[in-house]
Length: 124
Image 1 (cartoon, rainbow, N blue to C red):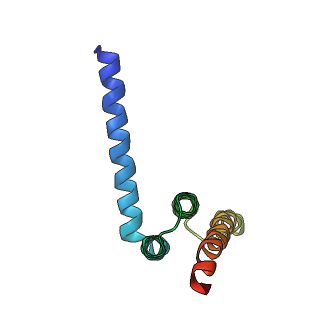
Image 2: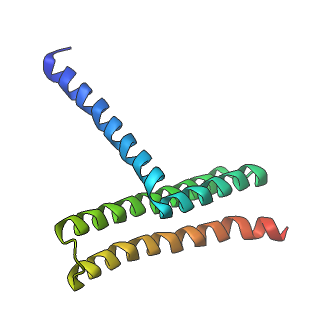
């Protein structure tokens, strides 16, 4: 292995470390992520309880990851906006609202996915 390959590998390992650090920061500091993580644990337990199918697991995992990922991006947008313009500004407010709207879209999809998976199981 040459030095370039080693540097690439070391940089990838460092990148994973930074991503893990960011994920932990979100889980420790952001109330919305804490709520979403709690919901993720609950629906994961429900998945085991109801023995959902592989396709249902894929849909559920995708929905959880989508919402939490978009929430992380939303948080980053808010932090950048606050850093750039700490005082209230109408245009910054619109930017934050748009980022929150993206989370809302993902959440609606996740709710629909959960309803499709679990309503029939609770009705049975």
